Length: 445
Image 1: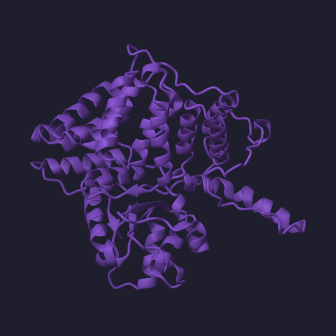
Image 2: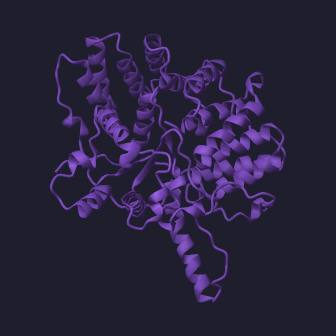
């Protein structure tokens, strides 16, 4: 039986063509994707679909305008698929088509009300490769943080609820799925009253997990043609995605040897060098990719973030700005650029108001706590420390059980309470790439 990397869910009206395009594009990167019309076979429709959702670690849902409207019907299959994915803890990635907008949480059925809080990927036909790159980025073990944070909070929430019921306090207003945006006029508690466990960097980043199932070897699914660079690119990406970058590097070297003018090969090799911490070579590869494909958004974004690690702030901001110009609705690019403009240690490059505008836009796509962290930094840079404290207090409440993030957020929260903006540590340009960088700098890697 095929081990699918993801299940793709969609409405027939407006979503079928997009589903097939995404399946085909991701398949070329070494990931088999389950698509019902192609892969269902003769099995019983209901049981097989739900079984496939459970088997696939990732769940992609394509959201077209009004796609969730019929979810009010308990028998609606899109609702059932989304609810089953949430209930079984899949890595959920909503893909937002043009014209789609999430309803208010109270308008969604309770079993899928959490959907708007997962990290989303805006769909772009013009920048289709960037859309696929972002989906693959989430496939690489970087789950939308909201899903993981929710799991971390489930046990404490359940214990509190049981205690309240036992005490006869059923009317206590406990709301575990409340959104992360700070309520208006809500005064955040003093820092010492926020229930945060003291942690050290040596502690585990998350609660212990059961042993993972053996990972499928997607590289073996690529049919190789030794004269076709595309097959080496596909297998190279598959090796990188499954944690074997050295093998992937050999494949990309061969793809470049066969087709030295293929931008995709240079970009793929740059990603491998980034994983291997060879930042200078990664920058060189991304630069070559841009020379061959001047509007390649991921190359600008990746190169910009590496420039930041080297303290080359002017170049970093230039690259991230260009990536934003080419794809203005990418939440991760918005967040990366906003963080740079709000916290850059070089006074010449900070732009508080622009950072705030970018950060506010990023949180319309996702209430990821790190996006709220950036929003807080932007508010602080503009002098609105009350808003900075309120938003970061909310972000802090979402990362309990994640010591490194918790400690970083506490440092910044204290800073804002003292009415001081946050500054990244200044990185001398002559040091080795990546040394001394602020821990958050490679959060997107």
